Structure formats: structure tokens, C-alpha cells
Amino acid sequence: MKTTYKILFLIIAMIGMFFIGKSLGDPNRKMTFGPQGDPKNCRAIIYKNYEGYVMEQYKAEEALSSIYRNCGDNGYSWGR
Image (tube, rainbow, N blue to C red):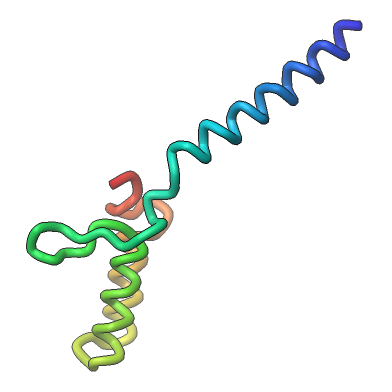
């Protein structure tokens, strides 16, 4: 009987966590920029680096380095 309650509790907790996570939203859902036009989240950083590469402002190595530095495992833009 106790096992049934544990499983039921876990299911209810998982459903609750799903709705809490959904309500918080994804900070990278849309591009965000600072007052001077600086990219503030990973979606905007990747877009700006791609745009700079296509317009030949950056080399591929520079663009990828910026993406990794800002959006990598411990990137500066996580949680902004």
C-alpha cells in the first residue's frame, strides 16, 4: 500500500513540476537585446554571430568561439 502512495505522489509531483516549468517559460524563446543592441540571450548571440559571419565581419572560428563562450556549458548568457 505504501508503494502505491509513493508512486502516486511521484506522478503528481512530476505533473506539478511540468506545469511550473511551463509557466516559467524559455528565456531563449525570442531574441533579446540590451539598450545598445547587444545580444542578451543565446538565441540573439547565435543570430548575431551568424549574421556577422555571413557579412564577413567575423571568421568562422571567431563566431564559434563567441557562441561557445556565451552559450556553452557554463556560458555567460545562461540565466540572463
